[in-house]
Length: 124
Image 1 (tube, rainbow, N blue to C red):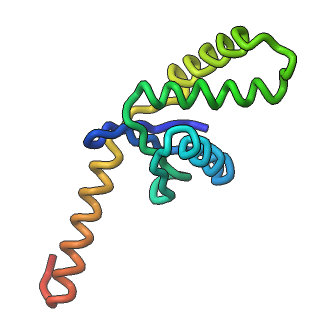
Image 2: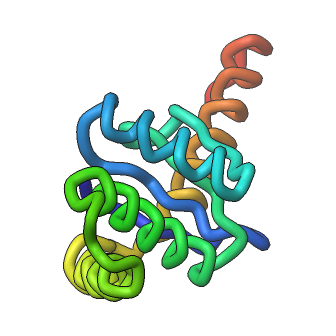
């Protein structure tokens, strides 16, 4: 799963680039952990976080739960350390910064203007 991040207003919007089933799992986790708003309108899905800190916590929790399922007898501190290390690797290698929400908003504005012109029999 790759993550495309975008600062948009007071939120960090994270686009999920991967399979739809994996995106749905991550959306559910973010909603359950932080009551995050999620949507299916871009990429395989998206999640709104309050900021980079919350996104980092999400990645740590995601990694922690995956490690916990496979290592029920491991030390909690070691699992948290491994989770933080894995989350850091994701942030360094699988996160792309983009301005995709502004592009989407511009395209929606363009299409809305074009639709109004068509409905009024005018050229856009």
